[in-house]
Image 1 (cartoon, rainbow, N blue to C red):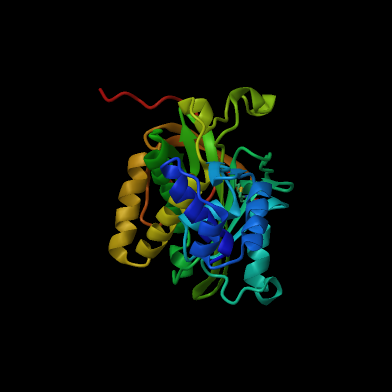
Image 2 (image 1 turned 120 degrees about the vertical axis):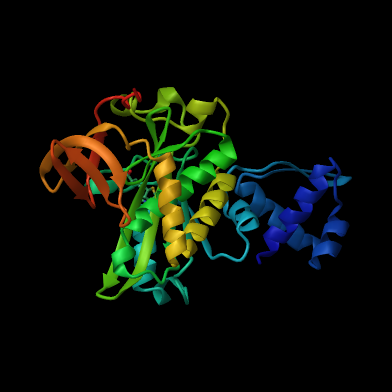
Length: 333
Ligand code: BTN
């Protein structure tokens, strides 16, 4: 654990009661010199912490909503890489998977990468993912999984479900899923997931789950092209959310469902939970896949995670594709 985290823990604890803590008391508690305390306080300030310092001691006034320190406090025991700017968190994760030693990492499994902004954020199907600084979540998790490649199609659903459940629990928002794993709120896109896998014939070598969530983007700050289709937690709830707390909740939920996927019972629990949040089901849809477009009614998600669509007398199963929900859900007669 980094010493600055210990200092932060002490500062957070004392701030709860509105108290100040003196330099000698801090130095005594952490077993370091007062000069070292001052250095750490300066570093925390650079990270965005507001710390009052006076004759009677130090007091933490405000913490940033995202920093390496906040993430480490909320996700103890994990290897976390936090960067102010990256090309893409998924690209760094993939590079770590391919050559972990180059990044000074012994075991890439479980590594969490977070950026405040991305210059080359990637979306599904070769699209770009807009990644401005200071407002949203750009997260990649290298999953620990012993899953066989046949079960791989369930991973995107698990990542979508985990994100939706975590966001719902943290913000109260009714987050839904558009197959396979778009996060929706109020019918608009709140976030998306890009899963990048490398497998050999009988096992998944590594799975990088990349999650982008619009958190504190104001309605008026979305580019015109996205104004009617995208939303954020702030736009839906009118309340800014703490990004570190959301990331911690998403990561824990994702770790939980990745573990559950390794047993049969867990797989059916995942599918049941997924179907209950799937906005796509029962809707008339248009699905674009491998250069072709099909239309019909989405009737279910099969045990392999594929979307089932009825089109006239035909039933089709899709393992990949871009879904457009054409009409409102039919009201039961
Ligand atoms: C989508 O198209 O819906 C998926 C978007 C995934 C974006 C996230 S942001 C963090 C991670 N890094 C990337 O470059 N992409 C994913």
